[in-house]
Length: 299
Image (cartoon, rainbow, N blue to C red):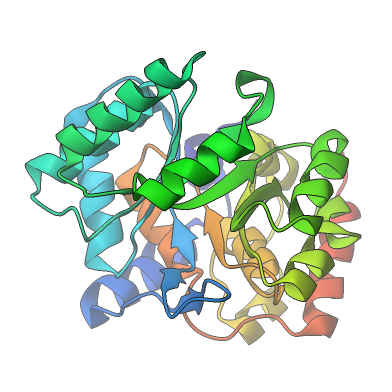
């Protein structure tokens, strides 16, 4: 499988991908646009960072660089599970920046006592007063939602949510959305995985629930699919200068999407991802054109 690094080395669009968006964002010191969490006066920057290898493996130097790149451009959303939670929390504490990062953590203790200890440890390391968002996730959590609401009432969490990465979980998410249990849902969505557009995204808009998106690059498979292909010239119509931005702008142009989690262990790729948050966004015709173009690429 081609990695994103391999792809950028050999793509005919490399020069544009390496120069324009990174240089523009870095020199202009622009701040990422924010989208409001429904029912609040709080906004989330539209590009976030997630559970990339350096966070999971505890590469603190690179992880800190990634977080500082995000913060420099007005980003804050950090999605973190397993050991990535400790990496992110420690860096927030080291930077003395508890209010600069929106920490979306997954608590997976098998008992309430274990879960509370996980929360207490993260608060202690980060210096935060509350975990910004506590997620329940896949087979690692069969959540007691009353317990999670209790954490919110106590101030241990500001928001509670659920994260899934496959449509087989959507029925469960819909039940939570219907009952008003969750403040934020996280699902997979891209031009190659549009199932969330059928029910999840419209319901989120109707119910006033924030949406974060995972798998914008299909866990890296996206770059294999576009490898060797020219970025279409018409991508410039919506200020898109790389294949990464091509996918991210498609996702961000959906009105239900609050934030896209773009995982990377490379600071340069992080800046490229951030570039997708600036400039024009695809309109409905552009979105259809993007989806058609990607699906018609040779296998």
